[in-house]
Length: 138
Ligand code: SF4
Image 1 (spheres, rainbow, N blue to C red):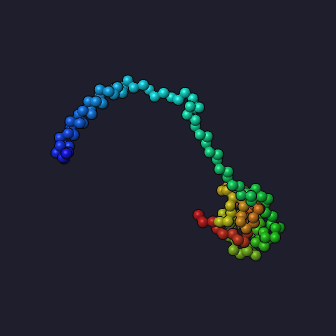
Image 2 (tube, rainbow, N blue to C red):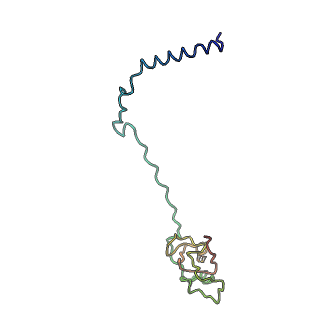
């Protein structure tokens, strides 16, 4: 029967025996052969990278430009150049407002035109404006 006292007595003796066994059988680190590189990639095939996911193109991003004569555009007072907005009819017009700084504008920063959800399938001019303008939060 092994008691705790017997185990404690055996521990240093077994540790010393283990150390001596390791030091006799293991070669010195400098004698170890260098790890061989694989002969070819066929030996260790590398999986092909996964194809990049396709970026969804918004159809409107390539759609035609919205014309001010479009019925919806006319109803909202859309103009391709904000400065040409009818200020008498739309007194809420604020100088400096334009599609490019409207919260609904979906064109890239610096783009000349981009989609607007109010005019699906069309692009609005970044310099444009309509009565539904909502200043983009900064
Ligand atoms: Fe331009 Fe905004 Fe009007 Fe769309 S809602 S046309 S982005 S001002």
